[in-house]
Image (cartoon, rainbow, N blue to C red; front, side, top):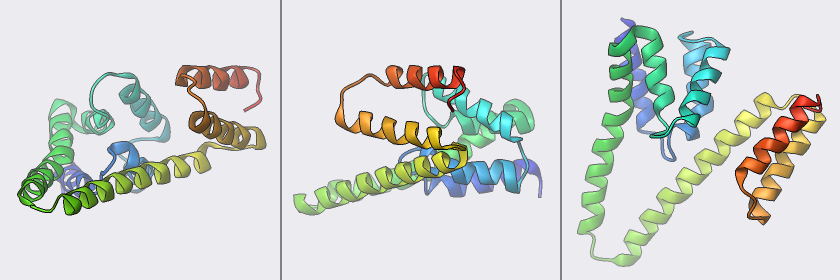
Length: 173
């Protein structure tokens, strides 16, 4: 099977599970792109994720960059199309179905269920990433401290990023 066809089919399947965006499936995407298919190495995957998070726009840019690294502009187009077409069609028909529903309670249940699914997938992804990147006691302390500060204060995330940078510079993590 050609690399482009494999990329298209596998990312199309990912699209149907990407409630909460690509970040919700990041560990699975990492496993596919780095471990199974060997499309990228660990550093390139990390770099592409960092670029996608720093750039404005949709969070599926990581996928576009994976396609680009495999087959240039055509690969980027194929990867972007693959990650967007199935979920777009699914959401189109789901939204039409929801809009035709007469019972507002059922509409609300579906919306809450979709929200809970998205939140659960994102939290699961964050947990998997934390387990992979935390390599010491201080890293776990920083992770739990960040979660606590995020939940119980209104601190801007840049303060937490700065705290992580300072701890990294001084070799604590």
